[in-house]
Each structure stands twice: as structure tokens, then as C-alpha cells.
Image 1: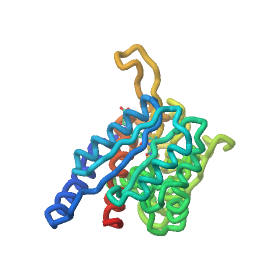
Image 2: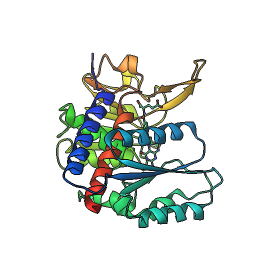
Image 3: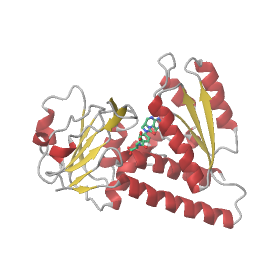
Image 4: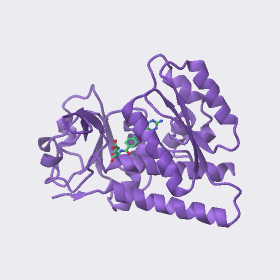
Length: 292
Ligand code: L34
């Protein structure tokens, strides 16, 4: 039976470390704590929940936070104006624009308008490029959180074969870069699989580490993995049911069949999700230190 990686506990430890550091900075005479802003567009339930937790996380560690909300119908130019103001506001260390955005808004345009020094999501091409070149940069929170989990669980990735499934801008593609970068965690031999990949099982069955970021509940089954594989599940899909909430969260991994075979496995919820939020706080602290 695999060791279940506890993302809630690891995120909590990380947040306590950040909190202690903020307290220390303040006792040393810093004039203000770190300040994170978030732009939320529309009424998507998941996005509202995620941003709401990010604001609460800020309170918990002693940051200031500002939440800027727009209706679904907001124009691209209004959003760009809000971003410009945040770029110019010296009291804001970093900010995020929660994704996804409504279809009438050009996501790429929005991301590129964020000043790279305030891009605590690490989505701007400048940060992405620097990350790919192993230069100092903000790393996207989800893959960074996975690297942190691998490190804190002392999971050796050097020379291991890793298969990343999904090539999204915010998870799969940056994940493949970080796992292949120098270091431990890192120094893995990485296969980036996607919708055009043929015979995916051929790769996953050889993999020491599998990271799924698809949003396809129960996709990864026991017959696709080998004994002792490390399984990281980034999928987090709201599946409607008859419960009081009206839904439950489902990962990409068929947990009951994979857990007995794997060496380590992340649950959903309580795995990668909380780490995404914790790493945003870490990036914000980095932005603050650069800015202050
Ligand atoms: N700009 N957009 C931007 N930055 C991000 O880093 C994100 N992401 C993804 C969606 N859009 C984004 C997030 O914040 C996904 N994501 C995220 C954040 C938090 C959690 C999951 C995904 C999380 O806290 N998950 C909990 C359960 C939460 C619940 O109950 O709904 C978990 O245990 O997995």
C-alpha cells in the first residue's frame, strides 16, 4: 500500500513557515506586510472558492490582500486597466488573475499585461522563459507545489523516468520543465504526454513518476502503472451528485485501484490543491522581498 502524501499537512507546515518569516520581518521594523491582490471574473463556483481560500490564506499568514471582482461581461480593456493600476501600485507586491476567463477575453493578452515582477502566478512568458532556462523566476504554484511535496517526502527523482500527462500552461508544461531541470527534485527523464500521444500506457507502465493533469476523473487505472510508481494527481473535477453540496471532487487517478500498487500517491482533495495555495504565498513573499 502506498504512502498517502498529505497535501493539507504539508501546506499547513509551509504556511506556518511563511507566517513566522512575516512576523520576523515585522519585528525587525518592516513598515508593512506583504500584499497580494487577486482579480476574479464572473461567478464560477470553483474559481470563487479557490480565490476565497487564497484571501483567507493571506489573513492566516499576516499578509494584506485585496480582492477585485468583475462581472462576466467585463470588457478586456476594463481588465487591462485594472491590471495597469496594480502594476503601478507600489503597495501591491504581487497579484493574480484567476483563470479561466470568459471566452470573449484574450487570456494571453491579459497574462502578458501583468508586470513580470508582480506575476506571482509565474504565467508571464518572461517568468516562464526564465524558469525554462533555470534562471531566477516565479514558478507556477501548482508544479512548484508538487516539487515541494517531492522534496518534503524525500522522493528521489534523479535519473527517474517521469511521465507528465497534459500540457497546459499552468500545470503540465511547466511541470515537465521543472522535473527535467537540474537538481533534486529534478534531473528526471521526462515524457510530456498529451491528447495526440499514442499508446500512453506504453510510457506510463515504465514510469517511476506519473503526474496527471487532465481533468478526466478516474482516467489513470491500475493496469497503466507499475509496482512502486509515484502517482501525483492534479485533476480536480467537480462531479455532480445527490449530496448536500451537490457535487464531490474527483481526481484523474482511480485511487482505489492505484493506491495498493503505488509507492506514493496524492489524494483528491487534500493533495496537490492546498499546495497550490501555499506556493502562491511563497511567491508573494519573494515578490515582497524583491520590491521592499
Ligand atoms: N491565475 N488561476 C490562476 N492561478 C492559479 O494558481 C489557478 N489555480 C487553478 C485554477 N485557476 C488558477 C488554482 O488556484 C487551480 N487552482 C486551485 C486552487 C486551490 C485548490 C485547487 C485548485 C484547492 O484548494 N483544492 C482543495 C479543495 C478545494 C475545494 O474543496 O473545492 C484540495 O484539497 O484539493
